[in-house]
Length: 237
Image: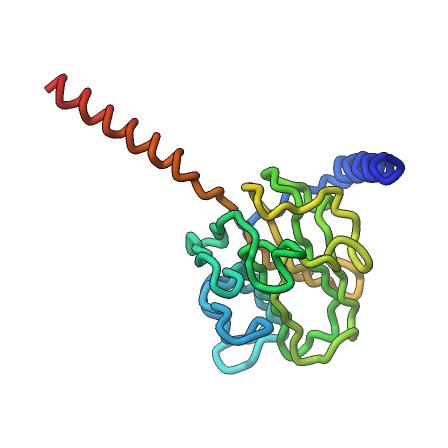
């Protein structure tokens, strides 16, 4: 009861702050969407559908900063698709690969990349969404912060799952909700770079729509409904 009351109080405080600061939901944001030739914490992870934002660089000069975000299936789960514009579609369900299902993980992951020639001049925040409701405000996201100079200057990247326990505490801000991989909904993610003055310098963001898989009985009923419509159409003809 005490924990629940505290969570409600924190959520209310966050909503007040959001209104005061004019915060908003996270929407897809990037300079380009496509291939980013990196490895997201392991082999076999697709890197051809990445929301990429860069600072500096050109035809021959490397970029000063590269931010990348993507979503992909976990191991041999159903593939995650995308619309080519920063919105991904995954399926509900619990991954069968360890440590899941004992520690339930979703069948999909989100991958992030920070790279470039001058990453040490920036600090970063990775925002992630536990709330299946659409348009979750940025202030209600969990987040992990990477301080300026806090990691090797070349790159930082990984592939994480919302079912990973460390995302719901420790270095994160409160997320005010518990993630359930069996619940359909919309989840948003943002990787944001900040300059030395704390101002936002660059952002990569994606949307992941998670759909439920229809039960066999539902599919059968849908088939009967379509057959009925076809019969009515023939009768009218």
